[in-house]
Image (cartoon, rainbow, N blue to C red; front, side):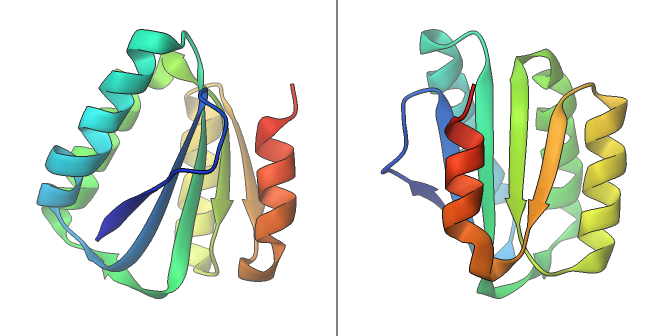
Length: 121
């Protein structure tokens, strides 16, 4: 499930993932929030926290997530990923570099550092 992290500046989309991430999470939570933020901001920074209870994505969620990321790729400025999964880390760095936005990885115990980095200009 995806939850919105609400204690961030208006140009930063903070999301927290736990359990299984499904297509419905993208359709009902993430994509509407991206659209809402893009009405107010030309560029968005993303803080993506995959919590200790995170268990994975189903295939349709991965496809929808990639579609949303590519569709809005010119709108991303910086992405801070807070997670521990090496496979996601490698994919995210590759994906971010291909779409020309900065991706930085943080471990679970570096959440405060990730929040500081994502708000820096």
